[in-house]
Amino acid sequence: MPQPPVFDVLGVGFGPSNLALAIAVTEYNAAARPEDVVTAHFLERQPRFGWHRGMLLDDATMQVSFLKDLVTLRNPTSPFSFLNYLHGQGRLVDFVNHKNLFPLRVEFHDYFEWAAGQVDDLVSYDHDVVSVRPVVEDGVVTHFDVGSRTSSGEVEVRRARNLVLATGLRASLPDGVEPSERVWHNRDFLHRVEALTDPRRLVVVGAGQSGAEVTAYLHERFRGAEVCAVFARYGYSPADDSSFANRIFDPGAVDDYYAAPEDVKRKLMGYHANTNYAVVDNDLIADLYRRVYREKVLGVRRLRVLNLSRVAELVESADGVRVTVESLSSGEREVLEADAVVCATGYREADPMDLLGELAGRCRRDAEGRLRVGRDYRVCTDDDVSGGLYLQGGTEHTHGISSSLLSNTSVRVAEILSSVLARREAAVPSQPAYAATGR
Image 1 (cartoon, rainbow, N blue to C red):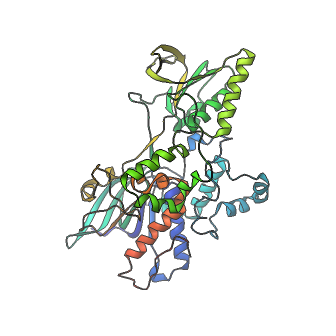
Image 2 (cartoon, rainbow, N blue to C red):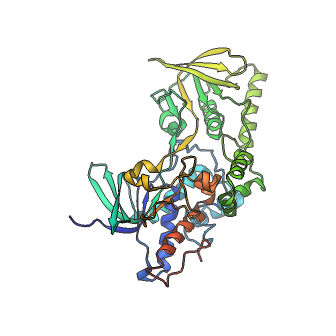
Image 3 (cartoon, one colour):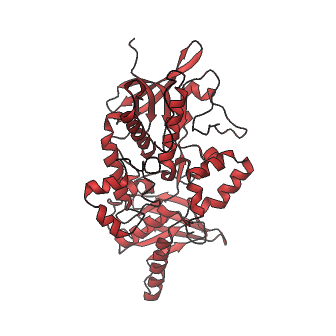
């Protein structure tokens, strides 16, 4: 049997994280000697690049600065920067005049697509990774054979010295709720909302940014419908994006978190959860409150906020969804006959170990059963595994809040690439490690 193609780095998933890694590899190779070039390839199940397409609302903005793009914190002179993208689109001066650090989400997605198009020779789309098998030489796992199924059903195998898993997030629905034609996760919002025709009532579950955005969108678009926002909190909580709190997303904060004792890690997550989890931009909170108050003045109540409540039951019929909402304080129940229910109930990290088969048993875990991960994002394995397994995501317990966020992406991929190169130094002793500054 012929040997499959061999790569120094093989990435599973091609969202922003592995896209940033592909760019880092491309920039490194452009300056490297031929014998030092890093061979890399990426596998993506989607037919083309896409990042939360179902929530690319026209007026939704990013919640991180444009300077935290795919490259700038690693290499401010990179041609793959958001500013260079704007220059190429003829919008750089207009953006500067806008005096805004936070671009439209749809614009940043276009930037991602623009960047992905420049490294598309490194990625195979429509490839669903179905297996990872160890390649053993003299009792040591030196490589990984990765099988991926194409849209036509054919399975292709590639061999890697290092595997970078960026398997992304999975939509999380309330217990017992299954997606259907009338019950969706907000991940699919724009793909499903077009099917609504003159709805009478719509229900949105969730108090985070996505829930607030969906509520505002439905209320604006369907002027004849009642929109009910249901959540357990007393009100939408504002995101803390103050300057000092934002330091939790700094590259240096990863070092602090990683080195901290477990009890300090828990405290840090508790202190600063309101920078990222189930929180809403202040401007959007104020806008929704204005709408509620305006309707109260006018006597036409179309936006209802059912706070301190939960969805106790969902029953679908041919005509709609019967939603039973229970007050957490009094236990009283109200039944809402709705045309559709949108669950803006967050995401959970995909377990990368599901792909690894027998290799998962060679990965070390801590006392709580979580993966042990090195500072360089490499999974700690048995001594007889020399191939590198790296994670982009699934490392919040070791690296903190920014472990899978855009805030630290460009620096994170530099650290992963630096680790790959440093571990190759025995074979190429003159090769310097790739510094996080990109210099």
